Image 1: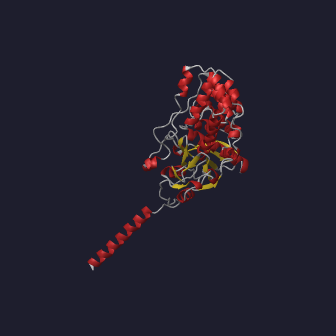
Image 2: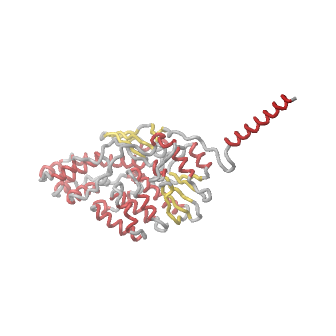
Image 3: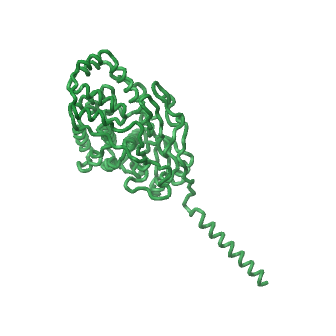
Length: 425
């Protein structure tokens, strides 16, 4: 009898221990079971970019594209070299620039241009030659992606997932393009060529950089070459410009103005938005915001003029560490502008984990993320978990989420909607 009682007692204890273990391992009331993190996938390029641009005159794009958890890493092959384009905007921009390069090559082969070049007195200006021989960076570089914007810049990311696929950051980091504040006459000539071909004078496209350097150098101090070039400008890019919706907003005059003049204009515009001069420094002093991108960002701020705390958006701009990130932040502001034009008013700007966001008129958090494909990585999970449970949260994206990312954001209380920037398809 004693043995039977001992066995019954042992069974009871065992059941209690199993029940306690099950309770400990089960999600607590009100908590959710999140999907396990995943590696960013490689997907058919046709799922990320429009079929009409996948192959064109003078270039091909790899049919399968890797992703880094947020953006596509497109491989664009041209006769000028292979470009790794982080994100659709950079892909569209490089194709745009490729057409300009082709036009430049065609124009420089004309007899009128050759005759003018032969007659031009090109002096060996040391500083100009030095600029022409030192390109911004190579065609293929290791970009600093947008992933660490989702990790709240400055705070970093702690945890086992920090090394997953090295998401969002690649070393060594590229250097920002030069401001070109010296050699004013040369810069004016060079920027006029950029304007003629409708390209960014501060481009980080090395072949285009070298071509503009060369044209600026040979036409520096003479109008003969520029005069001979009239008529072979780029003209219209047609439908390709639709994919780069911000281009019409860039002031033509400022495209050829010296950088200090651009900064002065942007300063006055931000003052009209109620942004104190001391609060402008993060944007004006960030070398990754070239004059062109600085103009674009201030244009985007002006579109949000009715939103309070715009200095927070300027502080966010100061934390960008690559061209990819500056373009991501511009795209985020443009998505917020589209939200207020198509869905409802926004009342206060916020930076949610380093990503552009705002509080809507109904009190909901609206986060704007111009991503290509969002995967459920450790970074995405940490980002989603920072949501205030007492405030509705909407994530507006320009691209799809993987099934795990859809599940994870839903489990953590997010509503996810597609809202591409205007012109972004």
